[in-house]
Image (cartoon, rainbow, N blue to C red; front, side):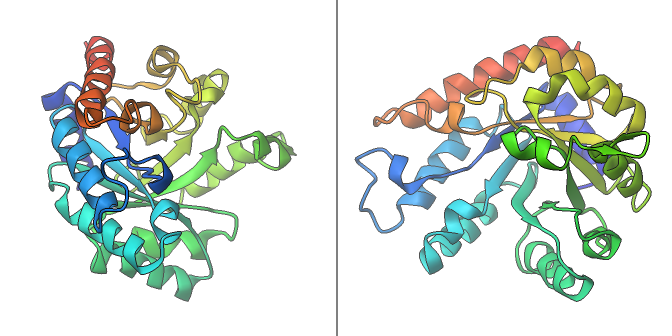
Length: 267
């Protein structure tokens, strides 16, 4: 999916919501547990209930890889079920030496129909460049995360600034705002203004709204630009909003609440 196509979808749906399919098999509704294709059936119901309210789906691969072959099959069925009118994110946090990253890129972009992959930049340019070779595909590079451990490296001094600022400045030169996005955690809202000075036009994937306490209003006020420039991910607060047979309806109601709020910020 190109940048222009993504922007148009945001305008058409009046939404920049990304629904995170962090499908924890232990949290599935009781009536689905034990069924042979329970994870996919859960995901399918969530997608059907929310597809007109969001612009993207993010599949956290860890929740599928942990289930072995059956989990990977559920992942593949899920991403193929999602319409091409949605931006599909493999939240895999890959990043390795060049020939290994080549294979990761091939796995998610050739074998599977993802539009993007989250990438860890610690090993440098040759670990990221393979993901930037595909037309209409994106690398979403970890910038400033919202986890406690962000202070161990990301927020440490590096020259005249902080390490995460150096990462943003450097990685932005490896690609363009047509094939690079950055992950910035919603709970780091105090840093959004400074981040926009470094990468004013790049899209940001922002996790941490909902269960982690990030403020959609603050993010939108501080980080939105003329093309929106945001994909705000909500996972647990939407997909596990009910543990009953009404889980899909409850997920839709939650997603609708976020979409309505986003519509106001897009005006």
